[in-house]
Structure formats: structure tokens, C-alpha cells
Image (cartoon, rainbow, N blue to C red; front, side):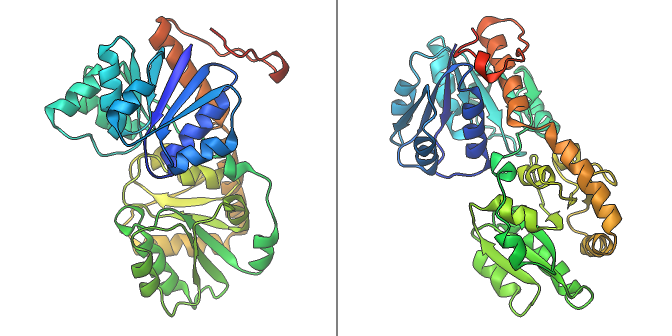
Length: 362
């Protein structure tokens, strides 16, 4: 089976990293080609990893070039919305395609866009919340939910130097693009302001970059308990240094950073929006909070700072929750869907040891 992944994003964000994880996990199961934008961060990442048996085809920012690069495949997997017309065009030539949808907002209502989604054999949503949006948008297109996997960076070997530098602090972390309209970092700043003297050893870490970086830093000026880290490839080190993960997003399809934090055994307080309630169970592995209720955010931070036994229980349950979102478990679901679309049959992934794994199952 020849799978062609298409992701022409010019950025390297969650969806692109999920593409990398899927390609990596499937590299011994199917022949794969990845069509990417030339000189994009995704192109660079795949080139650096150099997966055996995976063909990476960089193309210019041209739909025609991308369409040509998809020739000879049994199935196209479109990983971002702007490439859906490429899948629709290829379907007219006899090759089926499916789409992974990673945002809560429905596609545009233009007739041409609706037609493209109707051409899809299947739409995969990363949460039940997104599934509902897409089922209403294109009611005749099959929609199912396959959650994102836990990023392998969160499970990597940890360097203790970051934790050593933060010793003695109660660290509340956030990993997200610095975009308050969607990620809600102003809530973190307000909670830090309220708790600066009540919890003197607390330190709020904001990891990420984005359009609001300068404005957020200006608002946090003068606060001794907040630190902007910027973007870093050492996420596992910072997660391991945290005592609590705070995720006050105003909208969220799923919240992959929440899963990453949980995979390293962090209790989570997160917004009760979008797909987040599908992974955070209040009182079990974290707490859900109205994104606009600053008092509630401050209360939970203070409560968890003062109650190590509650933190420990939530953390243990968080790690158990995250284990179900491994790259292998998610890739198995995608592979079963591929087989169903291409061959019209169901498929159960055999439990093969690495030494017995074949280069292609079908």
C-alpha cells in the first residue's frame, strides 16, 4: 500500500509534528511519500530524520506541483486544510483521499470548499468536538475521531540542569503559541499578579513565541514570578521541572500540550473548552476551569501548591491517561482506516516484534 502524506504548511506546529510522528511510526508498515513545501521547517525536519523507506518530495508553493508529486499513490492523506483541493483534484483521477482536521472552526462555506470535502473518503477529527463540527459541515462525508499522539519530545531522556536551576520554586508551566486570543496567556499573567505575595516561591513559565510576545512581556513587567522562556527544543527538560501545568486556552481542538504534560506525570488545570474535556477528567487527572474565571484559576493554583498529596494523585492518573495516546496506538488507528479506504476491509494491526516486522503488511 502506497500512502502519500501532503502537508504544505510553511510552519512547524502541532499538526506538522503529528505528521512526523505518524510517518515515523508507519515506516515499517507501508510505503510512504511525504509531499512538503520546499525549504519549510517540516522539510528540514524530515530531511534531518532521514527515515528509511520514506520518500520526501519538496515542492514549490504551487498546487500544480503538489498535485504532480502525489501521482502513483494508492491513498492521499491530507494533513492541513489548504491542501484539501489537491486531494479533491487527485480523487477525480481515481485516487481516494482522507483529511485530518485539527481545528474547531469549520471550513469556509464557499461551494468549492464544500465540494472538496464532499470528495473526501473520510474526515478524521482530532477530538469529538471537531467531529461534531465536521459532521454538521459535511453530513454525507464519513467522520471519525482519532486523537493526536503524545509528542515523542515529551518522553525523551531528561537533562536535570533545568530542574536544578529552578530548585526551590513551585513551577507552573504553559507551552503554547503566544497568542492571547486563542491561548489565553493574559490569564496566566493576572494569576501571577494575584499570587505574587501569597505564594512567594511560585514561578510561572511561559514557553513559546508568537505575535503577542512583546505585548505580554510589557504587561508582565515588574512581576517577579513570571518568566518568558521563548521557544525551546528542550521541552522534556522544562516539563520535568514543572509542578503544575496551566493551559487557559480560549479555544482548542484538543490540546496536545496537555497530553505532553500528562505523559510526564504533571497534574493539569485547563480550560473547559473544545476537546480538552475529552482528556482531562476533573478531580481525576486535573481540573477544568472556565477560561474567563480568573478567580477559579488562582484558587486551583493555590490549592495544588498547598496540597502535594492531591498533586501526586492527579499526576499518577495523568500519566496513565496519556499512555493511551502513544504514537503506536494512534498510528494503528490510521493504518486500519487506510486499509478500509483502499481495500474496503477491516484490519487489526498484528502484535509483531520489531524483528518480525515486515516492510509492508499488504
